[in-house]
Image 1: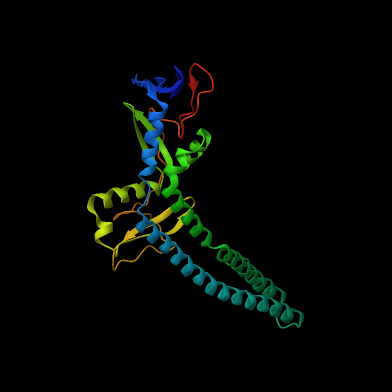
Image 2: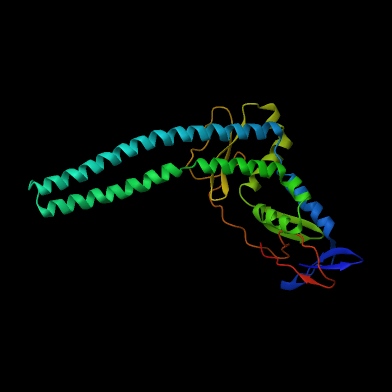
Length: 274
């Protein structure tokens, strides 16, 4: 896509690369309003957002308790291992075991010591930060449209790169593909707005147990059904789930992930990659 100024107004149009035949010019404010509507669709109802928040906090406390108990056990194992290493050295010095046995046992204990050290580090750092990320993402989806409205073009670009994997323009209409898990949030909102499930079934709760990388593992479950465990694969925000979160490839007529102000007259190229 390329932007140019006509009578003080920024317009976007296709450069006709890759055999694109679109001829229409689209105003920048029109595109911005469409992006704003896309981000508005992410907003959860207050009741649902509060349920998600409480679910995250509850899972965080559960995970914290599990990690604390597990760490005590791991550190006890580590202490016993150190004692065994000291003992075989004492046995070697006392002549109770030969050099070959000492080397074999020592190598085994040192290997187990290294594995325990890594495991302890994993549990010490743990998944608690992923719950903080979940809370931040929850806040982001509920405020994304407001943030977008008042940010600079550069800041809008950063926000859209976080939320959108692909955006194409056809007949002046934006077709945006949201990243995981934001696409599931929109799907969840559409489903509940049509069916009224959220209002009619108070036992139905949206849970966001954990984040992997940036994306969250999400699942909606009804009464009597259990949420995903903190390390189970899958991410869902409806009554179905996916297991292949491949990134979407840029499409033809791809829009930039933000609209840039044109700094000078004439055509200004815009990076269309996502």
